[in-house]
Image 1 (cartoon, rainbow, N blue to C red):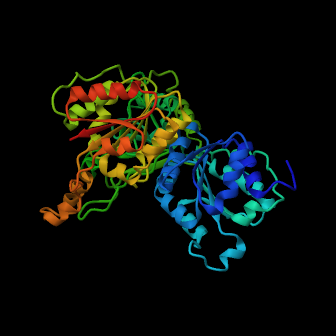
Image 2 (image 1 turned 180 degrees about the vertical axis):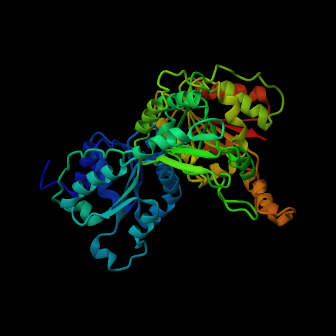
Length: 519
């Protein structure tokens, strides 16, 4: 479509829609007003307002993981992009495709060094795979189509398109048709025989990540494990993992370094499909950063950008496991109903019993959540999303994106009080969009993970000032009041029976519901 009266912003919206981008998580400013106007009068794009840019970028991450296609964000100049960088970092590490639309001053205004002038491309590059500034209204459509195509490069990439305001308002925009999504890279077929030889017996490990963790691919991995005797693990953090009764159970490489070293110590031969060789999350004095044992043979059959399904199909065939019943299939199994005060173990049991069929669990509970995986393996089938980049404030925004992508599915967001405060504005967007999300806030009134990290880095006897820097209890956070002020119904619990009833209420509510769990 070409229309000399169409401005650049209008061609941008039409092109995004033509390329199947139909959701925009927005936090606009003056430079983006022509894009806002185009979103207003061009039908087809769902525009969702976030009160902080990290909510918008985190929501785009969660959307891609569940929809399998990118959403766009709308960010205001360099500072707006900078506010969203933390969750763009997480999205990049997760392999999520995101199309950022970032406003820029008109070219004539940049020369004046106005207060909001900044190096937007410089801010975007560390968290983007593809960065471009549209030079004219005539090029915006083509640039937008190529941004979407870049975002679809396997497993998913961050594309940042910078739109100067004069480029947006000038006429001459042209709509660009859809571009084909790039095919994933082929896996390393030359290594297939070596992979087969490596996967034999209990000293061998098949380590999976990315799209190797779909239900179908986990079944293939289970067949390979049953045939060869190899063990199965996934990375600690996974963009999307299918779990529950009837599916192949896969454990994770543990986060605590000492436990991870013990878990990986038996494996002399490791085959990687969609995963990286295991390393520590941080460096610790006197401890190794590489978690595998000395001399371990590590073979990458397919990295995250490759055809992981093709690799697992080929490996299943090559090991003659196609007809072998898969190992490690989870049976329906729920823990006994706990009662009394909530502890980490009883909390895990209540959550396991409450998980609905076909639900989405967005997990940002590194400390509290370590007990969740073993007891939830026999829950009804569900999808589990982790924070892959480690920058906190991911959980509630990602839940927004997941709920927008899958409105027919229940979403549960599991997060600590410290993490949730980074993107507390998410609650307002949940309420405004009436999203079906039940939020569980684990209120331990501290950055609990960092208390453990003090010990890990060798600080054995922290003083009161160190402890004070990790505490959230002066004043204590009141999540019920905060949620209520943003339109989200909420309650506070400290007993298992009350938590069970609260989750049931939340899951039966059509909109958002928050539960503060005092630990």
